[in-house]
Length: 426
Ligand SMILES: *[C@@H]1O[C@H](CO)[C@@H](O)[C@H](O)[C@H]1NC(C)=O
Image (cartoon, rainbow, N blue to C red; front, side, top):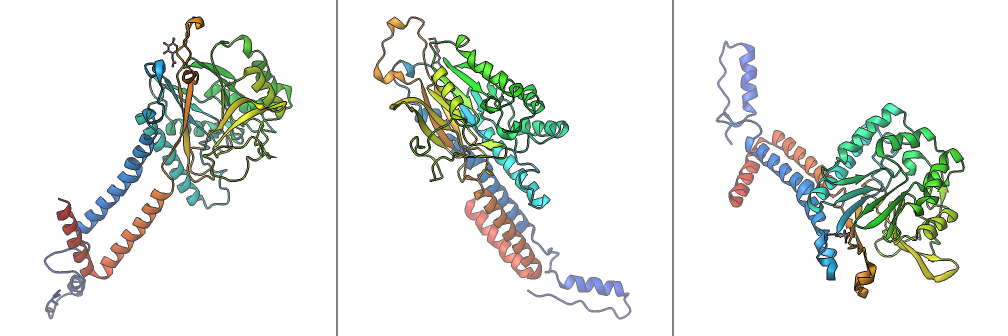
């Protein structure tokens, strides 16, 4: 590079002298310090990686779970249209209660990141899998049980922004978790507030010729009659209300009681330790045995779906008086959130197919035909990979820009390099 020093004018003012000095730093022919091509190159690079991590990767993760890849309905069911459900467990939106020790800025970044993760995955799941019904399994919020009404309403709006309802599709979000209403200390105001906005916590739905019973087992477990009466009454009066011929499924936020060393979790669980049986401040890892037994024996569900544990658990409840008899299968759905202590967040898909025959005598039941539901865990893209690449790229970009200011020649070498890359691409 040839930088040419201008001749000094003998009587020139001081300011022009300074201008001349400034020009020395710049390459000739009116070129600027940072090449626009370099800036453009970096910009394109960032657009490409953002597009990859926010779209391409999410789309391919969701498409792995396409219904046709795993439903495989056979016989007469192959011709029937199944009812398809997606379960989302424990989104537990990050808030000021989640990381009280973290600096505010970091906590804010983490909150935005996890909101974005939940929203993007949800959007792509809704678009590409298009389930008929989306069911949330509780713990919508992290500190929901602690907030006053204005704060709770703000978080409710935030929840609806992250998980907007889809037109012509059902969305059931009325099952409360212990983070929404508490466990040992439940204020009736919190239960009522949750129900007023999200819907009745104890309810049943007929979907895909199955009866889905949703139980607020948390309130049911509470010792105060004012809290437990609605849930207990609902359960004991259920049998007279629901269709006796349809297979049943139960939804509960907290999993039902099991002996973790005997009734073990199947494959798909991240942690190797047995399912925990614990009780602590505002939580309990399983529902007491007495309520568990009542639910299982009274409703005899085919399968129970629960949340709360954050990890996946697919197990069978056995009859303790006759260990060879299975009462029901239970799947604890993995958390969909990136901040819940698991490496691979997921959602659970359920396909219901039960062509209902009003005249059962003419039924030609082949042994293959007895299953009326199929279910599959669907992994979301691994969190933090994108974040790590973004952070690394950002540091690299800042490094390059600083280096180009310090060594202006570098800027032109890099710009030339991006030009070669662009030419190769074109
Ligand atoms: C439910 O039963 C009706 C009547 O047999 C049938 O037409 C419909 O396809 C069934 N739906 C599902 C999802 O099995």
